[in-house]
Image (cartoon, rainbow, N blue to C red; front, side, top):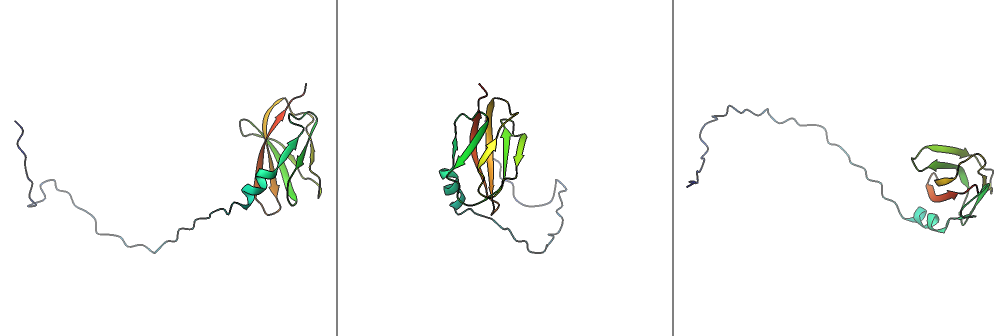
Length: 121
């Protein structure tokens, strides 16, 4: 039979000592929250042809593209484009067949990503 035992504060039998509290300067936590505007832009972006062969064209992009980048399935950067204003057609020569992500960076700095399938057949 196990008997309950009540410990009452008496003496420090474990020899445990705590340091006095340290008071530090106040800190500030900043949280940035999206407004959903760029998500709306991303929902309008379409790539053609799908799957792409030698080039891909972007439709539905609002504004100017600062730069475009293609990443492979492992997240490795495959190609970077610095398009002229209004240019939304990107050559894919030399990129192997596979699944990629086309990342368009808006002039505001917001990245918009879209899946890109390349088929060289």
